[in-house]
Amino acid sequence: MFRPMRLISLTLVSISLSVSIYAQEVFAAAKVSPPKLIQANYEVTKNGQPFATMKEQFTVTGNTYTIESVSKGVGVYALFGERKLTSTGEI
Image 1 (cartoon, rainbow, N blue to C red):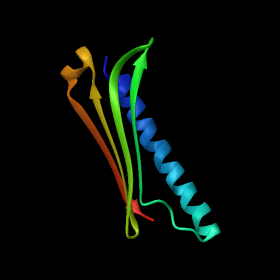
Image 2: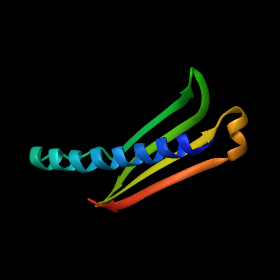
Image 3: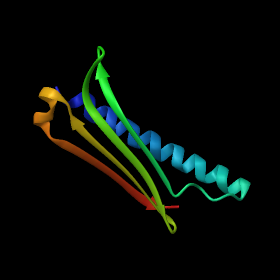
């Protein structure tokens, strides 16, 4: 029952990482610094009914990045608690 939310979270972290790597190449070619912080908050729905809230954050500190994804169930799904996924690496 909770697997779709986990799959969505893992997919979003993977996409965020891919975008991050691509953005680094674009910014390096343009000789422009990447943003230090990007945040997104949104609601995940199924058939128009919310079942989770998501908070995504991309942070750059020095030459390292951190991507954090926190999902919280809504309604009955709140019983599953909070899920936190983190990715860290060098730029």
